[in-house]
Length: 565
Image (cartoon, rainbow, N blue to C red):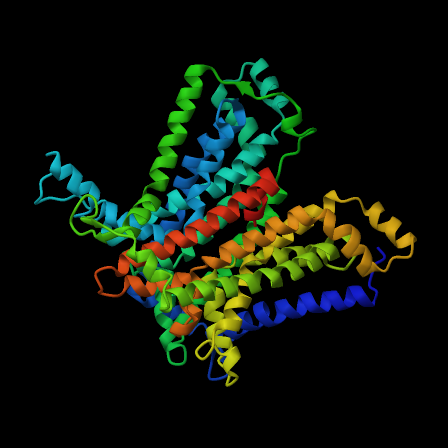
């Protein structure tokens, strides 16, 4: 194969590879060296110490249990919903699909504030049961279980089930109904049709989303911190930040998570995606959806509203608490106020955190936009060596935990140059970390846009004498505008509410973004600190909600493809 390696292509490749080398490969190699080296020699003793520690073994066990249970339960929630949404046509279908994505608009660790208020031993639910005489005040139910273990799983399931729903519904929509009809005509039961026909065809799409859910649940830092559940891997890594130069166990733990992430990512790309079943045609062109009867429509509405209502309870509690003056051992707040919102928009650190988040997220979105266009252009408009590897590298950050990336930046960029050292000024690395983590969104958006745009238009422009840059600016980019705007909005909005990177990298108050400020407020003893934190969460929730609505309108069903590794 002849490659297109002119000067412009080589320069763009150098920019992309240089970015990944400095901000992915360098911190990863730094952590690997510290984890496997002792006195200049290769060693595995730190991993032996890790496995010998009862605390670390318990943390690993808890994290695996949380990730496995979250993935399994989220799938059990999403699978029937995806079946109903793709199999039946009924009134309000678009509205229910949109509402089901609502839990994505709030970081789980902010929802944990609301869930604690609802499900604590003397939270709203137990107090309500006591009031109606169904529960004794002496024996409150521990809904959160084992120090918050089941609360973490419950919140993860409610927050992350939209991801498998998006992927499963997209996969089911592409199943050719002729296959199901042929099996039914041969006498197969509904369960057998699902097990032997539908399930194998949707597995690649399912696993693509399930891997992300597993990694997200395994590496989520904010939710266990809010619940005070410290015996999980992310919190152990977070606590080891203060001992980077004296305790190598932190490096061993981070490398373990990094290797696990890469292995799962490679497994999903090579093994699961490679063992797919092929269809002659796409499902949505084969047959119309079944029109649901009135009774079926009511049943579908009941199922969806029940799931959506439960998933939104933590969000509702956060909104309620943001307007509370005092909410302590009572079903609802004792007093109501809007002063919490006045506090966050005043001249204090909360207002600074909003400005910081807007600034960091905006710059990271522009960095992602530039890199995303370059990478997508190289993959679709140029024949370059190892194009598949570049595509995988561009998508790797989607599976790379922010926890690992932030730890690597703190360890690897401990320079005397203040703007590169997060201990002195984390602004630059916060922008970079946000960019790295959300780059896959804009790459996938731009890639899809390039694929849908005929190259003949660009060739015609070139034949008329236009320079490549002029062709890109006048022809290609305007045609890609919807995809690029949607991808940029997503990168901006999710950067606004990035948790792990912010908690680890933002070490000075004047650089706190919204999420770090929320965590800081939760640790204060002032009576209204939690309410102000919730008000900040509501502001972030509003920004992300508007962003997702706009992106969803522009991308439609393709929105789900952005959350696949």
